[in-house]
Length: 262
Ligand SMILES: CC(C)(COP(=O)(O)OP(=O)(O)OC[C@H]1O[C@@H](n2cnc3c(N)ncnc32)[C@H](O)[C@@H]1OP(=O)(O)O)[C@@H](O)C(=O)NCCC(=O)NCCS
Image (cartoon, rainbow, N blue to C red; front, side, top):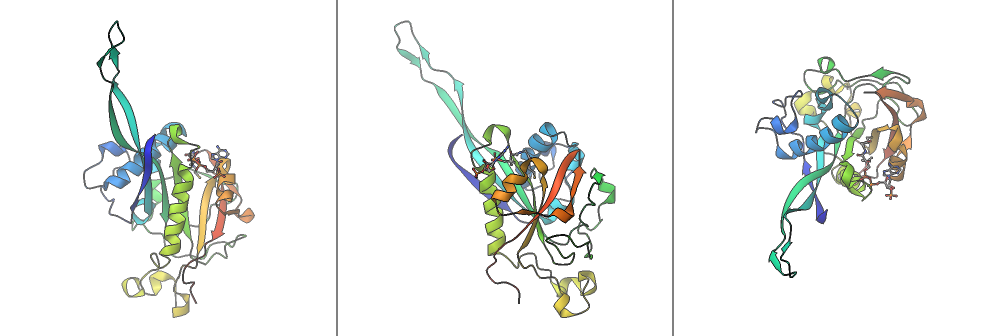
């Protein structure tokens, strides 16, 4: 990797034409480039390396989520240096620098589907997704750090291409998503005038969902300690579950936000 890696943000976007059965580079040109780049990283890491089926990698949360992608400039030699018998350079080395996506993370707004049942085993099934792309507001089972009702945002799909691991790229991604949420605490709060009280699961105005800093992650067990380093605590009562053949745990963190809800 040469040069400083840089990071790009993509807010919620229309991905209705994304074809989950096709690779990112085969998608139509209406899909935002940043999302294609995020999916390229996710395909390399989750599909090729961790064997998640390609059609299960994209889900309806992708359109309503915020995504971050880290890029690196990679320098590759196209023509090596050539010397003559006396050691004089007859052809200088030629190289090409290209920018490539190397890491990604996404932040999904509330509401969410219920917490997985402890000990459950499931694989993503697109036919079970809510047709609107947003699950309904529900009262979930209470766990160690979640009362079942409070709105929370969910970080996930963090992935760094193998050759670039151990250099702090995931840390850059997690920090970017967390600081962005802290600086934009009202971004995901629903509009009552647009949705109406009933859809928000509220009968009184004090029941209208307002984000108060609670952040969740469904972490693969082997990276639980990494999320701990970033301030998350394992929610014991969420238990563990098997998703796409990979064991997961639930973790929470309450982020300090600029203007806490009253
Ligand atoms: C998990 C993953 C995103 C980490 O990416 P990364 O860029 O290598 O991570 P970083 O270099 O930013 O390291 C972050 C911290 O985690 C630690 N860490 C990273 N990988 C680790 C590992 N395999 N074992 C133990 N600690 C690890 C680092 O020591 C670092 O701690 P520090 O900040 O105190 O030094 C990357 O390994 C990956 O893509 N794995 C496969 C996909 C995956 O499992 N995603 C998690 C879904 S929940």
